[in-house]
Image (tube, rainbow, N blue to C red; front, side):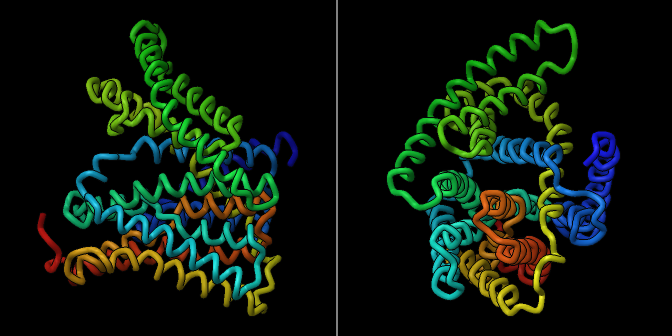
Length: 403
């Protein structure tokens, strides 16, 4: 990519992502699908106008860090308390069944090596809290019983998913599976999550004081984004992926988090709201770049669509992805309508699944066919459940509990 071409490609990327995301939302399809399609259309799969060069890759990495920061920022640990053990059961079953099922299918049936199979299983564990929250909010059911169970389970899935991602990242750097490295990364993550809220509390206090005394606008977004990137750097220094730092920073700054900073921000709602409001435009700018980059990185022309592997692999993983999330819902208390909607709401992989798949690709773990197969599974599991959920509520909503 020539230096001056970047100034044409970036607005083309941003505007096409925005346009297709808008069209998808109007068609009641998650916006992430439109952003992914923008990359597919502009990239080598179709038009071939833009290549996933270093400049776009760097912006995509910033986007993924900020995306996980946004996920952490929106995490509400109180949902876990409200939903109780049912959310825990749904989360654990929806995490381990796809992980084990995807791993065994990839390893025993498709003959993938150990690290490849672990990455495949890890990708299937994801649940997109963003897609789930959006659908439940649109339907006005986020505060009902099934909504509390789903949102609580999605929070637990987020935390488990980030830990698993960090472990797999360590495996990819070391070139294999190591129990010693697993213990090390878990210890680092635990220490990081314990120290992050304390450090963020002190920094947030300084930012608040500086904001009151500042004579020019823009101090909050500049300092908070700097804080997130510093956390990302610190996570990398500890041997974890940089996106873990973004998630930890968001979790630490969340006014709904139960650790000290959450209590401090909860006592000062206006400051907490200013952080969220002033950072949203930055998140809206950078996070779509990651999803477009995923589409740009996918070369559908290089895939042998006549090969039985791509179809059998996609179908097999799709079945595991669907069944794995439904299992947890089947064992909780409630009628069949309650269990059905909880299971459906846990299926969307969305941005979280894409993060796993992209890490597997850039680490050299996935070849183009495996990566494409997982993208197909992520797209289907992200696209269909919101549509089925809306139909399900229209047909069976009267059978759900009203509290």
